[in-house]
Length: 234
Image 1: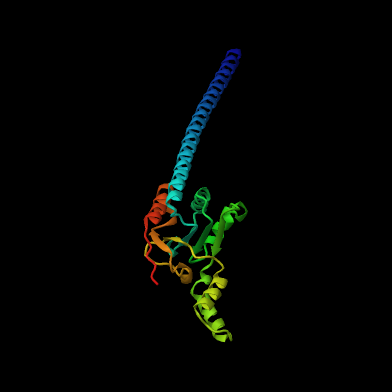
Image 2: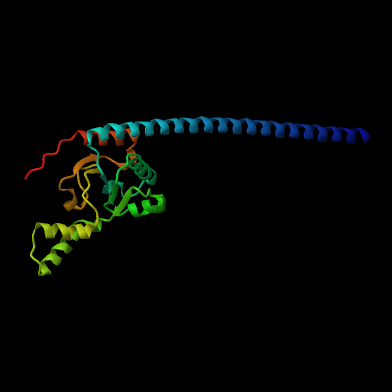
């Protein structure tokens, strides 16, 4: 009986030792994995910071070169097409705002055919928009329908209708200046009902989606604008 009791005690002791050993092994394994994750995170942050510094250096270098040539858009407009209407990538939009700020652009207009930019603006937080960069968010209603409303207003008014009067009326309705450069994000080469009166003299390029834009693509488009030659007729 005593021998049986002693055997049971030994088995319990052995089980306790095994359990403690397994627990220690799990703790060591967890600690090693945690340390590895921390190391990977540090290297990832260092790489991200390095890329950030390199890009901002390229931006400043680009700004310096473009300012010498005198060809940089003061007002940039983005047209996000119907294909991108399901989800606006607020991080991409935030990046573009940051790039415009670094390049000292004066105005950025964001237009979306389905008004999905409103949700994006909420995600970005308009309170975080830089003060010296005027960020404007316009709706699809500001397009052709506004022209119809303006035409009715002009036809009902007693003032003589001329080009200057039309320009003043449409400018008042749209409440944003003419952009020098417009980037349209859509698969088809369509302006997605972007307000037409403001882009009479605007340089326009088309990209497939705003979700694919990065620093290199953004700079390449600005370089394209800097090299373009506009021939304005009389």
